[in-house]
Amino acid sequence: MNTAKELYRFTKHYGINYNTGEAKGIELYEKFLQTFPKINFSFSFIGFHKYESLKKQEGLTAYGISGTMLYALSKQKAYKYNLYQCKEISGKKKLNGIRLSLVFEKETIKINLGFADGNIVLAALKQAGKKI
Image 1 (cartoon, rainbow, N blue to C red):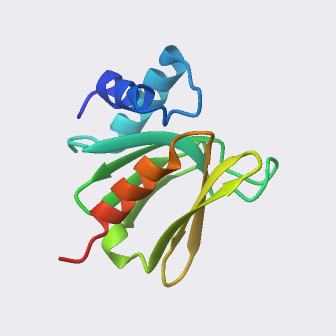
Image 2: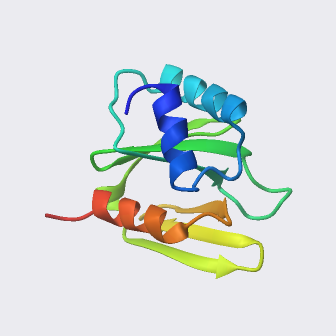
């Protein structure tokens, strides 16, 4: 997938779009593709990046997976993570939704998926980080 519409529709189809409407979702992925051009993504989802609490997070974030890389664009910053270097990828069901945790050597990334299907996102992240 390499257009904003394809990336958003993928998230909508699998219910991993944090209830983002089509106009806002496509706009989010247009900015995402401007930041990460010429990359073909195999998986996309929407969540909240570096989520600690409602007041401590980076806002609605577009994510895409290509190969072993996870790309993220929040309201504040763009990120690239090599999932192959991730020591642990886990998910936890909380009262207000699914929380993912990606543990790297120097930092732990927390992602809030809301009430999305966390299992599909978890499986995609683990598959991308698989050591072959």
